[in-house]
Length: 96
Image (cartoon, rainbow, N blue to C red):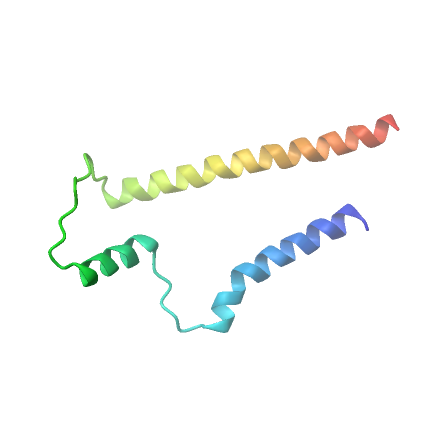
């Protein structure tokens, strides 16, 4: 099987895995784990007090920027290794 077909099938599988929960249950409220965890703790033990408070709570704009920066760094790392593997494969074919 051609490598391009393999990559296309893998990309299709990733999209399908991501979209499947939204297709199966479109009306569900998909919230974050932080909110669900905090709500579960408050429901189970209403008098619970956290052990410590954060040293710094960034403004929402800064928090979004840091999250986007983290995602960009991750994309760069993944892209580098995918490019490295592809180049290694291309040079390996030329030598043979």
